Structure formats: structure tokens, C-alpha cells
Amino acid sequence: MAGRAYCLPMELTDALAENAALKALNETLRANLEAVRFQLAQLQRMVFGHKAERLNIDAQSGLLFDVTPPPAPAPRSREVSVVPKRKPVRSGLPAHLPREIEIIDLPEEEKPCPCCGGERHVIGEIVSEKLDYVPATLKVLEMRRPKYACRPCQGSIAAAPLPASPIEQAMAAPGLLAHVLVSKFADHLPLNRQEAMLRRAGIELPRSTLCDWVLGAAECLRPLYEHLIGRVRSGDILHSDDTPVPLREKGATVKARAWGWVNPERRLAAYEFTVSREGRHPQSFLTGWEGYLIADAYTGYDRLFANPRLREVGCWAHARRKFFEVAKTQRAPGLAHEAVTRIGAFYHLDNAWKALPPDERRRRRQEEVKPLIEAFHAWMAAHLPGLLPQSPLAKAMAYATNHWAALTRFLDDGRLPLDNNAAERALRPIAVGRKNWLFAGSVRGGEAAAIALSFVESAKLHDLNPYAYLRDVLTRLPSAKARDLDSLLPNLWHPR
Image 1 (spheres, helix red, strand yellow):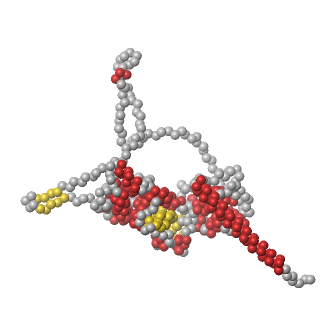
Image 2 (cartoon, rainbow, N blue to C red):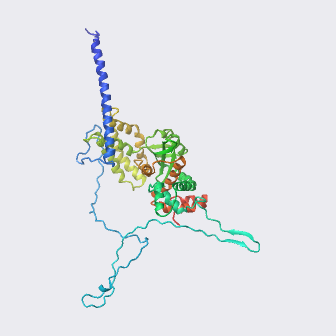
Image 3 (spheres, helix red, strand yellow):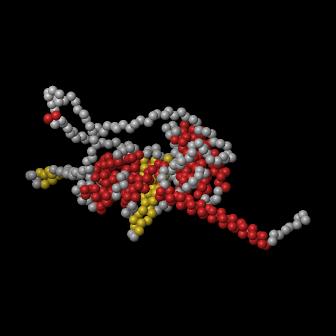
């Protein structure tokens, strides 16, 4: 009987084929069901859940599963002194605030001594301070320029020229322009609310006039804005991210984009407004630039990364968020919880080294973080084959695996952060603002917003008062020379 071939009956062959097809269909349906449940849980958390990306994991449980790769070395233990929490103490009010002194004296009939009836003398006073609020006031700057003429000649009339103004022929002084810009782009007050606030102060200013002032102030700031972009590009480390901005067009709104670029060494931020998310926009901004670009996995950057001198740095916050979204929808701790715990170990170690010099930070990363990173990669390789390919957890692992080179590049340079949170923080004012002003009215309006936000957020990165900074800049910039532009940037600005 050796070497004799047997043929399966046609019915059995059909049954096996049908069984294989049903198994494939079952896996597809399971994946679809898991994806739908994941989406439903996400939507429920968006509406009813907490926004903070924090999981409540039992500290005693440790990691949830044993894995075949060797365990990562335990982080070094450190002694932490526990200081008892102090009760809050009310601090004194700032001395620079104006003070109105009100003397509250005893009535005349209570001044004599109740024991002997003699006169009582002042031996001191009790001082109590309360903070009051006075609504913002408007004032008129009336500039009078004497005119001079020669009586015998009856001519040659001369008068001093007006100082340069941010917006010629406009009645808005630099202080009011700065107030409008800061109210809109730092405090997220749309122009219709500012119009109502000015009306309560007794000034009728139509919204269209405020809009013209925003556009005019942005045009005044444009030369300094272009100089700011040059300074942002001057470093070899850049954060980049983008966010949608609705743009009003005839009959509808379209999804435009706001791009944020942050130089962490100079602590400067620049924004760009574009009508689309095409890759040519970041490619145009980064033409000729070389260094480390910290960004998400947007494909528009791929052509840039073909240049070996422009190196991609991945964002662990993005990778962690994909695992967190899965973990938050699971009732019992699982693989997603373990992934979040493992990534948290990277952050726990690295956050303790932020004050160290870059070379020392790089050395410690190589010694302590790199083994944890390699163990995490081996852990994903061990579990990924057993997951449904289209499941959310498999997609999270695939994202981390496919971008592994970019995610681990922070190990090469101690100056590099683990994530792109600096760019995400820079875009947060736009996300908050569009809930109030809703959309950009035009391309010119979107560009004006990008210019104003560049200076407001850069001033905040240097702990400056955005109003004081913009008021001084709008006063000095109209008459400034090209050599003065550096001194007007937030990182070099000093109040006069």
C-alpha cells in the first residue's frame, strides 16, 4: 500500500473548504465586533468619562503576564524624604498695586475710657487688606502738535510729525490693539464678546472695526514674525504638530490647518495657517533645515526624512495613547494595561534626569532605559502574533513596532524628549479658541491668527505678560530698524 495516493471524497473536500471559509469569516466578524465595541467604549468615555490619561492599576499586581524575554533590570531605588504637608497660608497682596486707604475710627462717644472716663490715645492700628476689582478703563490720547510760522514771510509752517503708528489712520493706540489681540488669542474671547464689553464701558465699536484692527496689527507684526520664524529654524531640534481649523467659505466651511513649530532650546513658537494638510506645507517650512524633527507619524514628513541629515524622532505619548485607549475600555487589566505600565517606567526614570547635562542624561538612558525599551519590544513581538490583526490592541502594537526606529532615537541624544508634548501644548490654545470663535473668517484672518499666536505663545514660554510685551512691541516696531528686530523677540525682549 506504500506510495499509493488516496483522494478525499468531493463532499469532504467541500466541507473542509467551507470550514476554512467559516473560520476566516468568524475571525473577520470577531475583529469587527471588537472594533465596534472599542469605538463605542471610546465614545462613551468621551461623553461621560474622565479626560485624564490615567489608569488605576493595583500597585501590588505588578506586570500582568510573564514573558519569555529576560526581565528588564529593576530601576535604582532612591530614598525620598517625606515632608509633612503644610497648611496653606494667605500671602500678602502685591506691593505694586495701587491702594486706597480708608480710616475706620471709633465714634466720638466711644473714645473716652469706659473705666475712668479719661481720654484714650492712639497706640497703633490694625491693618486689613481686601482685594477689589476696577473694570478696565479706556482713555483718549490727545496729541497736540504746535504749528510754527513766520509772520513776516506768512509761510513756512512747520509742526512735529506724528509718531509712527501700528495702523495708520486708525484711532486704536498700541495698548488697545494689544488688549484686543491678547483677549482673542490668549483669553479666547471672540470679537463679538469684546464688542459687548467695550459697549459696557461706553464705547461703541462695531465688530468689523475690531476685525480690521486684528488684521492691521498682524500686518504690522509680519516683519517681526518672519524674523521669528528664522530664529525658530535656527536650532537643530524642532517640535511639529498640526490641528484642524474650520475656514469659512461661501456657503460652507472647509477644514484648514494650523501648524505649530516649537524650538525647545530658544523657547520660541511659530504658527502657520494653511488651507489643507498637504505634505508640501511642512516641506516648504523645513526647506534646507537639518536636525531632529519631533513629530507624529504623519506621512507628509516622509519625503523630508529621505534626507539622512533630517532625523525623525517619534512620540511615546502617541504610542502610549493607543494602548491607553484600549486599556480604558477593558473591564479587567490585560495586555494594554501592561503596555501602559511598561511605558510609564520609561517616563518615571527619564523624568528624574531632566536637570542633568545632556551627555549624562544620554549615558543613563543607555544604561537604564534602553534595557526596558528592548524588553518592551520583545514583549510585543511575543504577543502580537496571537492577536487579531485588525483589533485595536494589534494596531497599537503595530504602530509602535513600525515606528520603532523613530521612537528609540531619543536614546542617541540627551537633549531629545520622549514625546512631542511641547507641540501639543502649543496647539492647545487653538483647540480651546475654536470652541469660542468657531472658525477663521478668511485665509487672511487665519494668517493673522497665526502671527498673533506666535507672539502670544512665545511670550508665555518666557513667562512674560503677553499684553505688556505686545503693547511695547506694537509701540516700537513701526519705527524699528532691521537691526532692532532681535531685541523685540520674546527671548531677548526687556521692558523699557
